[in-house]
Length: 136
Image (cartoon, rainbow, N blue to C red; front, side, top):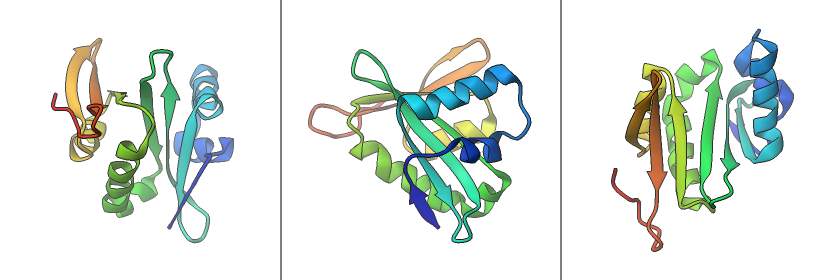
């Protein structure tokens, strides 16, 4: 497995499949606007993509998409997320979660659910100025 930065539009397409034009435009903005990563098999197949969208206040919004191959590699994906978050430049990262599987991954990765809004959950990863993770 290889973790590569940045992710490409091809990687996004592998994760999204057929989608509405608006969803595709938003996804392309995500990789153009901030940091992004792609996890690929040794054969070059896309497993998952994710990234951070920086906000003006110094925080970031996180995003994540995966292919069906991710099921086989969940432990590695979680480990990579848990290693990446504390090394980011952002003291706080919010993630909008819309699926039960996404909520499970967010919780395993150390994020805390902060609110529910319009059928979506907002999960947060946060650090204090000393680098320790904040609670809830």
